[in-house]
Image 1 (cartoon, chains in turn cyan, red):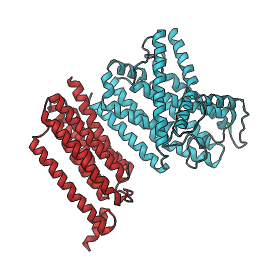
Image 2 (tube, each protein chain N blue to C red; image 1 turned 45 degrees about the vertical axis):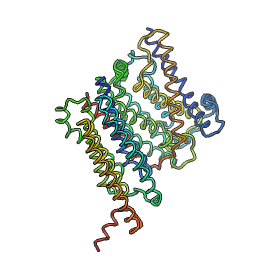
Image 3 (tube, rainbow over the protein chains, first blue to last red; image 1 turned 60 degrees about the horizontal axis):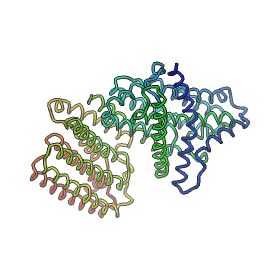
Image 4 (cartoon, each protein chain N blue to C red; image 1 turned 120 degrees about the horizontal axis):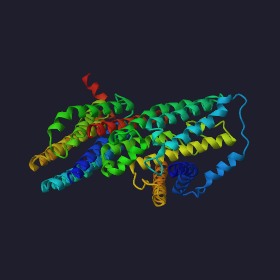
Length: 313
Length: 218
């Protein structure tokens, strides 16, 4: 029974923390650029504001436009259920493994791309076409990179991979792990629309991707989509943190282990937030035509990761 | 203890390979020089690790030589060469970036396939890094063959030399010191001759595109 309670707590934890994580990244970025910046809890206020506003829908839009925000947030929420955040092994481990996670990700992308096309605005169509290009190149890398870890652990189950890494800490230094980390980091940036690939802080650029697709949305629909994209970032970062640096994650359901797991997860996420903020301050956005090159590089890294973990077993 | 040794060797070899792959992704000569310098630092680190675990004081000397020559002296010369050639970028190589990355991934797979019997025969703790070293050699050869600018080819050659040195260290724990010093001298001389050539090419054609050399036939 307490196992299910923890599962429930974990999802509430992820939902509640996701806006804070994005706010933290924005705040660190602002400080690095010597701006005062909005406080880290600003995204919560944005959500509150958006949920109270009226949703304006174009009269050209079909049911797809209204349904898409629910589909996108439901698929992201399902991913959040399947990814180990605080505890391993989990009750929900039997429900899905990394393949389910990858396909749920694609499902969300699919609905978002449809919703961008639906109202017939020029920006939405451009955004959808770019998003699909990026997703088609990033998705195989995600699967390959995690699969190279799965080869080492002997299971495609995300929880089992984390347990295997906990049992044998030296595996974290193997080239398979390091290359997979580099590949998955690039994919995280591409999938969550961070800086070298997409600029998250503006919707005034012709080369925007994510913002172009959700340009037509307002009110609670926009709130749902924003929340889903923040949750996606949270899920990807905690996946990176737990797959590659699993120490601190709880293996028993005692309150002590759980609170220690929460503290270590917060520290790991804060570190990753600092890394992303520093990187976003240092690099400029890539030209759109160079994005496939970046993703090819990450795919080659994942390919080398899987080769070395297959041959060095 | 031995497992730590082999982990470090494989880790270092994969890092050198990644620095080699950077040549294919970046376009400015400045980034190439940085990648080469860091690759040489990692190579010197691997030599020092081998020296520590095998208790071979000669190898420390080799590592120090590597650090001085390849991580400091040659990059410094390269930086000096960059100045007049600032506008020269690898904009249109013979093979485009995405394809060359995929090809180099296949080359590394090929290196793994070629090395299988070698790795199976070897009893050294460093054997797992040998395919990566061979992969670096293949990738550097590919860089030399597929890039147009003379300076890129020079750096590809230097990385090829790094790959050979890495293979030698991983496979045999280093060659005799006299030979090593001879190799360093050769490398330095070879590099200086190439530097001279790059200058001459730049002076004659006002570009370091080696395709221009085709005009010499007429």
